[in-house]
Image (cartoon, rainbow, N blue to C red; front, side, top):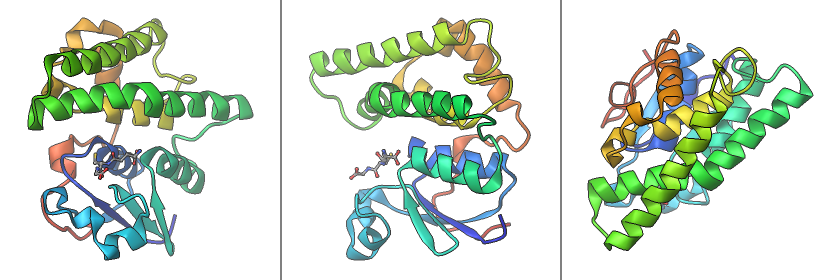
Length: 210
Ligand SMILES: N[C@@H](CCC(=O)N[C@@H](CS)C(=O)NCC(=O)O)C(=O)O
């Protein structure tokens, strides 16, 4: 993948981390632009030119501005050939995981963590979010029984996507040890060459590629 990459994101953002982690695991240096969500920088006319949805992350590569982190993972897998499906069946299985994550896992985990960290809504709302998150963790735990990775015998963007979703789970007061198969898989993901934890990978300032 010869062209340079620029990642726009926030150090607090799991979707930004998901893309940053993919780049790091692929060994691809990237310029980083810090988008300060607290100042509404993601809603400026300039940023909306990059992402019509007014959200981070955005990846700019080869003249294309790309949004939606799971779609960006698919793009990167395609252009690098890394963490990519080897067969049509794998492609579909990976998509199933990514779509399920966006539908079920991310909302529960992400919102519970957001509310725990930044706001305290009504207890019933918190319970509902937490229940959804725990249901998602239960699905992951069951699926990882006796398996090294989510699809096939090697890590794919399905793993990177779901791992990125869980990365701040401790901030949502989820105890990883309660889902032992998820914990074993987490340790395996954290041992991949190039793995970098979120607050090391994503700074609070712009950074040029090393
Ligand atoms: N489905 C999107 C979700 C992105 C997202 O929710 N980004 C958050 C930060 S973690 C954001 O930009 N929030 C501001 C907003 O939605 O206005 C993705 O996966 O990229």
